[in-house]
Length: 168
Image 1 (cartoon, rainbow, N blue to C red):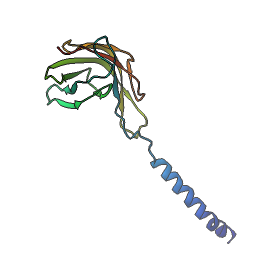
Image 2 (cartoon, rainbow, N blue to C red; image 1 turned 90 degrees about the horizontal axis):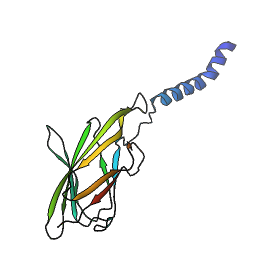
Image 3 (cartoon, helix red, strand yellow; image 1 turned 45 degrees about the vertical axis):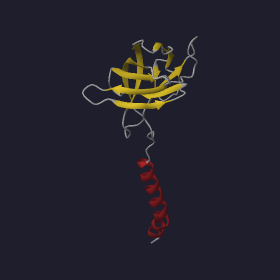
Image 4 (cartoon, rainbow, N blue to C red; image 1 turned 90 degrees about the vertical axis):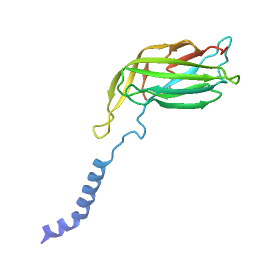
């Protein structure tokens, strides 16, 4: 009889502890946005200020697929935040500039990188961090691109310094 009363006293406490335990196991702290971005900072030259006044379009060239526009008609650009592919070894971007006089140029930028899976938790989908190994560009409207920070991860830092030429 005494044992029966003791069990009834602790039964609500045991039930509450079991509920807390179950809810703690189902709580997943996965990042809401697990996409990493490359950051481009426009640098001032003798001819071009650090703000690009031309209209800027950028698209990604995806082999075997249609190209994808990621920046459309951007004006007064000082910096860019662009996505990077998860598993491609090389990303190809096209930068199209058009000034007020109607002059236009297109540059192709190739970013070589290594991709490393990054796991937050076994319950979360893997993300990829990247190490930039090289960057090349055509030189129609871009003078040069310098790698500032090779690591691409969740930290928002400038990965590239980009120097534009004046359109003639």
